[in-house]
Length: 482
Image (tube, rainbow, N blue to C red; front, side, top):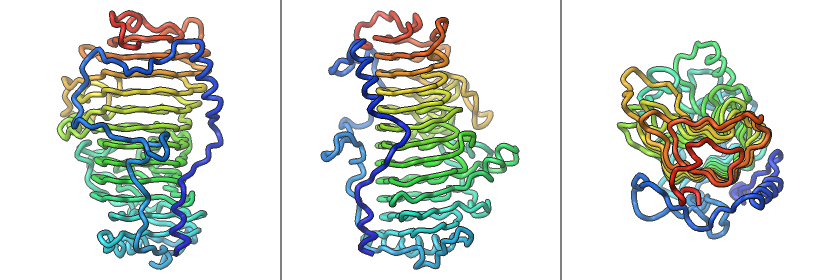
């Protein structure tokens, strides 16, 4: 067992597709040809929404200033370490291990206040239905270990809808539980030596395609009302729905992950922090049929009532592709508010959008103090899209007067090659998107007649090509993008 404990070593991930050296070189060339970002803090020409508390979360590690993973702390060494085989597990890819996983977690729960426990999943294919984690617990997948999601829908039980959504996201009523689930937990680690969790989601996608889905599909991993969470150094594949979904959580780190789904697999978002605070997502490679990363905070009147925001979030060094959606999405479910978000050092290619903020009437809430910088895009249809038009609501009780507030969006050091369309910035009549700042943005490959589409927006630009819309060229402020 001592050798298995030592597998906690450095968390590493190897990227094969993005070229960061090329990205750095290209940004350097663009910077030489344009104005540099001032090292001074940008002075906001408008008040931001109040941020609870006066202290700023220290994301940076004393050992690695380029990492925000320090919010989790050191990896714990658990007092009890056992194998799934100790609970009758059979790794032949055919035998159900649902009972073995549940038996293991029931037993290990006894150690949550006695030094914690670790369940090792050995090499092999371990078929299972849904199971619930416990506090002070590590799920460790050894090299060659594959957890396979059961294709029997009865092994994904129906649970209550999230209170900030009021119903299942896809269907009225309850929703299928995630394959790996936890509620009200603390100090949870899901990691390993690059093992795999495969949701085998095709049966669920076919229910969606065939319009025979009765309840909202389950996520691959969902943790609720939990804190101090680390998910690292694994491959997640073929989630039925959103892949990683921390909701109502704090101090969450997702690091060194590879997340894969067929590019036509519906709604297979990579990582979706939802009504969560103090979140670090870094060094991940994602291919999916939806957003690579999407930040959310509840849906219409249910999200407004719960008022649980997403805040203090850093997303960095994410690479991937999604032909139908965006590299980074904020919304459209944002009714509890989203603020204090930094997104940087991304590489997105062959995608519908690079950066997208999406909302609509009925959402209410706010999106404020968002910094997006150092993004490289290749063959992205619309590099930047801030728009209304989500036009989906949980029921007929949504309030058309609940207008979202969008202000304080700072976008800089963006390079897009072989772009198809100019940016789309479409605010809402009576509640325009305000305080938009674009600096050092270069979009190449557009046709000569391509023009920014802007309405109900205001802000300013500095060193932007091609020329932005008049809404952003002269707003009377010399400090907005200085």
